[in-house]
Length: 243
Image 1: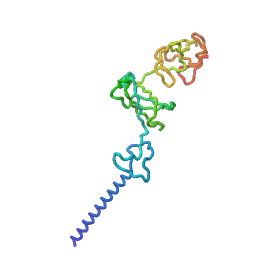
Image 2 (image 1 turned 30 degrees about the vertical axis):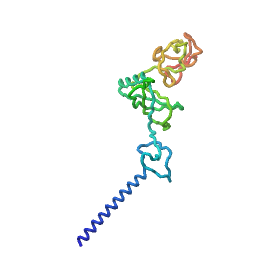
Image 3 (image 1 turned 60 degrees about the vertical axis):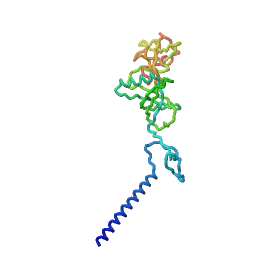
Image 4 (image 1 turned 90 degrees about the horizontal axis):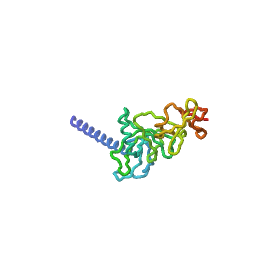
């Protein structure tokens, strides 16, 4: 009687293990029926729909494609001088992150911010440029792979700069100038040396000093050494309109 009961118990245990094996195989097969994306992002159209036969292997058609859309890489080329200036400014800065601003070629109204992710390990001898890659935050979700954009590379080291509006700058043959209003409300002609452009302004490296008042409106109606009645223009620091 004991031998018979022990044999039945062994048979039952074997049946349980067989059932567990079948369950494990069924769960594995069920997992194969669900494809989980390794990343989050924007999914393209479904290439295989209900009724299609799904194949396996390297030559099998893809189900769909997915692109991470929270951040994008922007690839562009910079000159050797710009590269050297950027790298050296990063070495001298506490925060060695080089900022990047991106605007779309078809929409310059929105600026996307990011930073340099990497530079290539060699220069293109034909063009004298080096390939750069920036990591850009897709703030409003509008960026998509393949878009053309304008990229501005900033310096990792913060520096102070004197800016004047573009409309305040006049041209006298090959020279650039501005009109400055002195303490006696007299117009003074100043030749200036310009640097880079920034959001409708130009950096002035020589010619005027911080705190001076520059004429931004009515340049064609005034002459050097004339008296004016200046009015400060709102939201533009040290900018005045002469009348």
